Length: 207
Image (cartoon, rainbow, N blue to C red; front, side, top):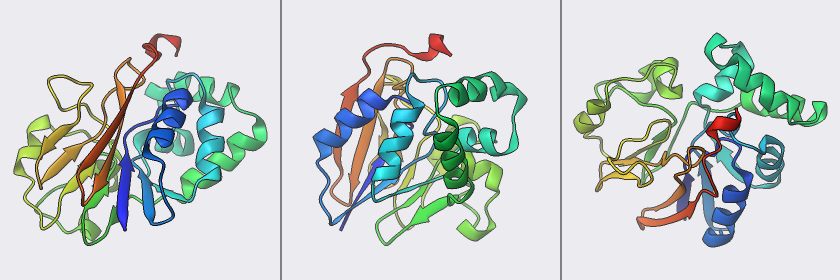
């Protein structure tokens, strides 16, 4: 089985649909979304409807937390997202978000939305660190030496922020700033295959 991991979508439905078309996942592929499905971008309803139709797994990100628990910094983004969804879709999204796991692991990889402490077991990690509520200094990634690759979203770690940050066999950062006019990125492990879709434009000024 290949695990196909997709970085932060942020309501960019056009790019999400194009990326899925490029990947053409098979029944033997497990799709793992790294969180931050909505907020900032133009079409949260489309993203939610696509996610609801997929046989996939999603991790909880800080933007899921914002809708579930409230976050003054993200209040306007959450209100805009809600206004762009039907009440039924928004309620379904909230139920889905509340049940999302904080991490995923199999024999090939570990995945979280935000970050982790390499010195602690997964069960002992801070939920705020895993979901990106706490964002450590970017140098944290250089201390990652786990028994499997770690795949994260949440933050753009490459100098060219439209490209994933890859430390082969150790670390894969897949947030490539789609909502800011960058790209939406997917990674298949253990093969290491990458797919990207260029954003149509910078959507962040819409929020």
